[in-house]
Length: 337
Image (cartoon, rainbow, N blue to C red):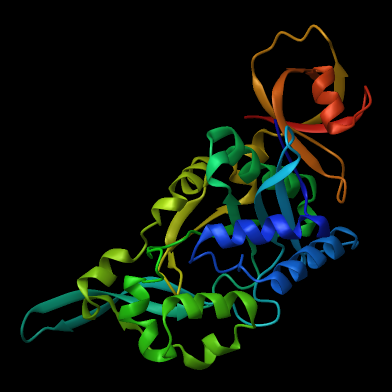
């Protein structure tokens, strides 16, 4: 069985291992002990803060294999990006070049540097050990944070976005970065990605080109990488797209991976989730799997288990009750898995 809960300082070694194994391109989950420790501290502080409206809070969760009590995955939510400095993206748009005299009218695709996502909540860094990248574990980890958002809507904006990892290889080569960013930053993709994860983002604003980038002027390999999802992130992307996230023609400024977005109320997990009482029954025969969440902030936790939804509440097995530390009649939250 798997369980999702907020990260704690005791999870730091496991998070370091996950970050090191994740490879290059997951900017907001760097393999840096100090930065990961800061993320845990920020998450704990955010959970202990009374929030009226979203700000610079950030929440980090871990996936635990309860059979071994080992942390095997992680994910997070930023309540609002761009609080201290703009959050940059490339918006894909078109520039019209026309000559009535020559009867030529061309619409040329171009990349416009923008910070349209500043001020919006972001899902980040879904990372799972290779041995645990099964459908159940990935869906539980990804959707557990949506239950958290549904439980605490005042802590987040009404729209969410996710940056999906773009094309790069294990040696750190990114065709998009090599064709564009390298010329302005004078460093390879691996270093730029690492610096973006461990330092402030001011260097991006200082070095990025200000004018539109005409896509046809880029090498073909770089053009082909725009909006393409890294093969290691395809399963994560499928879960999010199935939830209701869509691509709105924004890509990452480093690897050109696609950015997807959605209104919180339109997400399947959020719109279908219910809250009610936990009803305990040793003779539960239902084979319907549910995401089941208990706790409020610091004690928030989610598992997947068979249950039966009724008007009076959710009927669960005593084993599920024990895993979540519930009493009969405890208030819980659930959605079909």
